[in-house]
Amino acid sequence: MTEKPPREGKRPTIADVARAAGVAPAIVSRALSPDRRPVSLEKKERVLKAAAELGYHQNPLARGLATKSIDLVAVIINYLSDLSDLDLFDPLLDAIQSLGKQAILIRVGKTKRIDDFLRNSLTYHVHAALVFSDFADAGEVRDLFHSDNVLMLNGRFDAESAHIHIDEERGINELIHHARGRGVDSAALVTGRASSLVEEARIKAYRSACAAAGVRLLIEIGGDYSYESGTKAALTIAGQLPDAVFCTSDSMAMGVKDSLGRGGRHAPNDYLLYGFDAVDKGNFAAYDISSVGFDRSALIAGILAYLKAPGEFPPAGLEIPTRFMARSTG
Image (cartoon, rainbow, N blue to C red; front, side, top):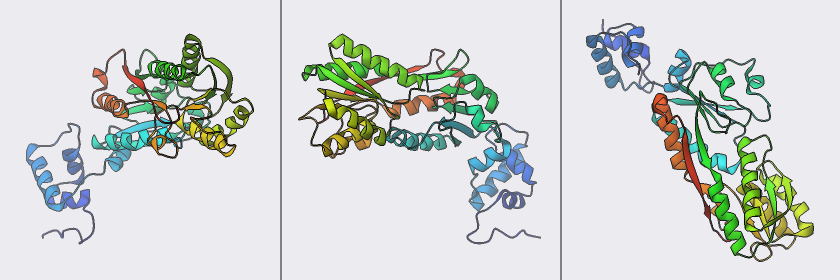
């Protein structure tokens, strides 16, 4: 008896392919698996032919959830709200999917330890974990996801983990040199989350570059990279406006610009304003923030290279340079 094809408009399933090929559903799963799994060449050809005729396409996420393994990539982040996050993660997720894998975004937020967040959660065996969160250490990520394939992007790498480092000192030095050349003698520094090792290094680089160039840092104000923390910082700065305001994120620089602007202080006429991350929206005419940035496509290419062949990733990690981008506020 001939099996009925899937109803019109209904997506074909593994069961449909199995019926068309005359094999068990388990054989279909083996034949279509990206891994080498035991199945005869004759049956595999029948399955591939049936899948093509029915227009069957595997869902990588469903396959990964079912197998709890190879197709899943854990992406561990603090938040997904800063403009720099939006610029990075959309193309990154697209690139991961281009490999036939699916990302699981894990937002840690303000949790001090990632295992606090996941203690009562189901964790999956993953192909790899990409760690952006300030709060995650390489060792605990390996334990949580039962994988040695951990790529650290937060500065908290160890001898067993691969890492990518963004060389921020280069761009910061260029920024301070530019500001000094514009006559800047004094400045305020608006900083991001103190919990971040990357931010700690960034602040240290600003201090060092200012000292070397003869720029006096009159005040440092802590923020959280957000627009709102920039507007609050501006209230403190407004009482004694320095020659320049350096912000460790473009979002905070936008907040400073808008807040000081409401008080009649405008960059670059009354002060010079510099951000960090060179986000796309920072180049809009309403802001046009002078900033430090890096080639995000180079970072994504490095991440993809790791996902394709973790064992071939350089033991010393990858380093991506930053550069200063002069716009109208500076």
